[in-house]
Length: 193
Image 1 (cartoon, rainbow, N blue to C red):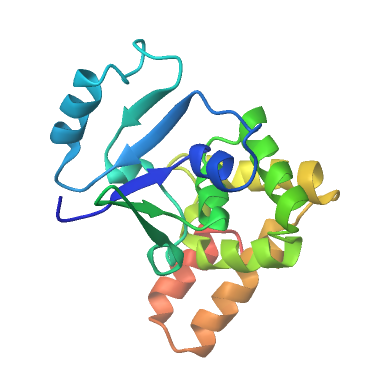
Image 2 (spheres, one colour):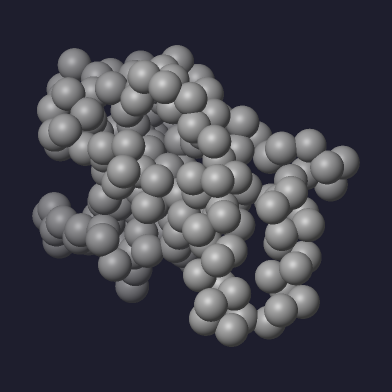
């Protein structure tokens, strides 16, 4: 394969940090090779419904981390096959689209094992992801935004004011940098800033 196989979801956290943090599946993706991988997984009997621990082959678009994830990821070679493992913080950011109990546990495991990401580190990551906070078409908060508000008291012990803590500083930087004023005004309106 000309591109490494991306391994994401909870499995990398289990592999690298806590073998007891069990995941029923290993999420993988490889641009341009999805069908080949699916066929191989089927032939090996490792697909969903055929193995207790199964491999889920999906498109790369399913993994939705922050914008700098590729530069922080790590490639590991195993028997001549390249595997791409995202940084743990990028895995956690991607979990904010769903944030169920298992996802909250992933934050707890990582904080317990590494002390990271701290609240301050996570705020910086989320500022890089400011576009994920865009409201839904009906004007309601995005699921990502709701999940950040759910995460904060559960993991960091206090609520977070997303507009003032995450979004306003980003908008101020965009204005200062001279970004298209129309774009900045649209963002301010959409994000109620």
